[in-house]
Image 1 (cartoon, each protein chain N blue to C red):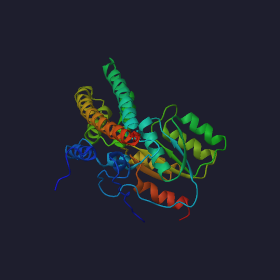
Image 2 (image 1 turned 180 degrees about the vertical axis):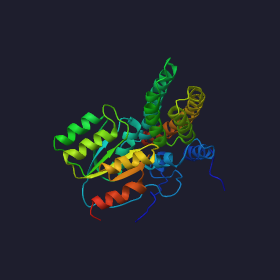
Image 3 (image 1 turned 135 degrees about the vertical axis):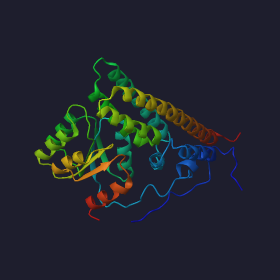
Image 4 (image 1 turned 90 degrees about the vertical axis):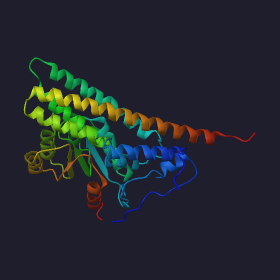
Amino acid sequence: MAASSTDPTQQLNDYIRTMHDQGILDDNFDQLLALRREQNPRFINELISMFTNDAEAYIAEITNALSLTEVDFSTIISKLHQLKGSTSGIGGHRMYQACCELRVAADDGDKGRCDELFLRVKEEFNTLKQCLDSISQMRSNIISNGTRSRRRRPL
Amino acid sequence: MAHTLPSSDQSSDQDKWDSGGLECKGQLLIKIVMRNRLTALVVDGDTTCWVLEQELLHSYGVQTLGVDNSRDAVDLIASDAEFNLIIIEKILPVLNGLAVTRQICEIGVRCKMLEVTACSRESERQAFLAIGVDVFIERPLDPEHLVPILRELDGQ
């Protein structure tokens, strides 16, 4: 007998499983979920927000470095390294792979391939961001439902 | 090595979540009992990685301090702050990870040093190991690599 589809935790489980199946998330995401934070139930949401902000900043810096007349490959490589690091921490599997491919092109100093592969990195980031935002939202709903039920007082 | 899953609780969605009602692949947080209070320094310029590493260490009862650049790391070590474990990322603001690791080793620090980084070449790995890093790990830092090191530091 399948669990009720209106159960928010089950919905979240199902969503995360789908993201795994599509290769958007990997086991590293499960690992960070396993870091329970009883004192701060919003930890996962805060981390997602931190990752997204940092990733956007790295992407902006790479965009800038690629747009220069003389492409700054060394900045691209160092920002990409940090982007890869945080992406692997959050469990963004497809985005991580796209970063690895871009790294090879940057090492080769191939601007054309860099432009093409960077486009893919940005697409995968948008996909990952949407996925993480959905998870954050579902998680917020679970938290606020939990708070509401604890606040219920007898008349 | 004892592996346990977090226990399940049926009282509310949030409780279910917090108690591990979420499906996890395999057993992700290896449980160990630490006899001593260990201390660690995390040196990483990226916020997400830094937070994750500190959280993982906290979950094993390790008291951690984090810095996000090489200069602060070297200043801290040079001021005789003592740590059981230092975790360093390869690419850092100010000095790169290799240079700061070398400086820390030259100060004469005698503790476990872990290099954690995303995707490295064998030559880089060898360079770090040659200057005194004990363990070189590909990101992200996980219990499978961390737990044996913590046990060793704890004298288990």
